[in-house]
Image (cartoon, rainbow, N blue to C red; front, side, top):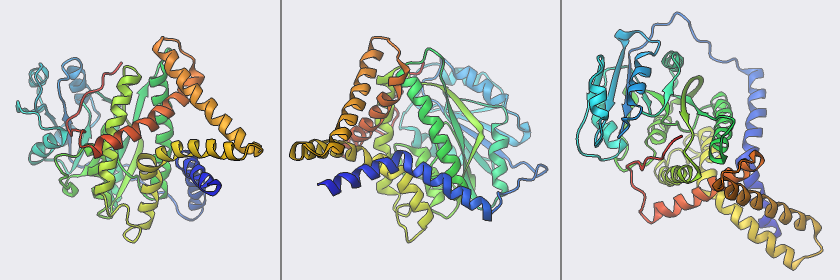
Length: 389
């Protein structure tokens, strides 16, 4: 029981901190032997298609279209497509009022992946850039993404997601902001080691000719599209200078809803991305995929619960082992801080020191809830939109 306890504790540490520490030192060694790829500033720009799936976004769709039109990229080389299938508000009407925008609309809502599949035959660009309707790109985002395609080994490029967090942020906003800063660092190091292991739908791009249709019931389509390209042997690059800004979830309830859905999609992707998990196919990709994705989505949250149970049993059976008493006390204090963060947030009382334990606990609870929802067959591929601030 004690051996199992320490194995579980090590895996938990490795998942959330150890992998990042290990990456940091590996890439420091790698830099001694290999120089980074040098981009040519005078390389010709490829043609690009910007694809946005929008569902009932009338409140901000005008700003999104204006943001797309303001991107610093030659107008003759960029095609902008909005697909608004199933939207029942004025989203299609607002988009149709703009010149230089191609609008695809059907009254039937079949999910984001189905909408993307319907848009693929309309794509003309060598590079397809995907972005969400509720995010806003920096003006140089497209140029920063496409420069990576000078490297013929690169098949997809992920941009950075940034959460707008103000001084009055609640636990969900502050926690989400901190989480994405840490995620960005991991993605940067992942790519420097070999490749990213996924992409966020807020902003990512692919070589159009490498697009491989994924199942219409896919829950996290962005991740699956990128990883299918990685399974072909191409790299998923990461470019923090191309970023998508969005506000945080309206509150913890909305953020939990979003995380549960992503977790359910994570389990689905693990079951479908068999090459990624096969070390005999690409051992480095498998190492990164399991360390960064599989452990976090499918294993470690359950180990956290197991560690707490094992710690209690060990303390009951061996009351004189003070180390385990201290570890149990630490766990109890951590979860008390998490519960306190939740209770205080519900009363609009903001104590930022409690935000991270609360968000961390919520994230792991969402992973367990998402797995249960997926195996019960209760997770639809159609987005249930989370309210944003």
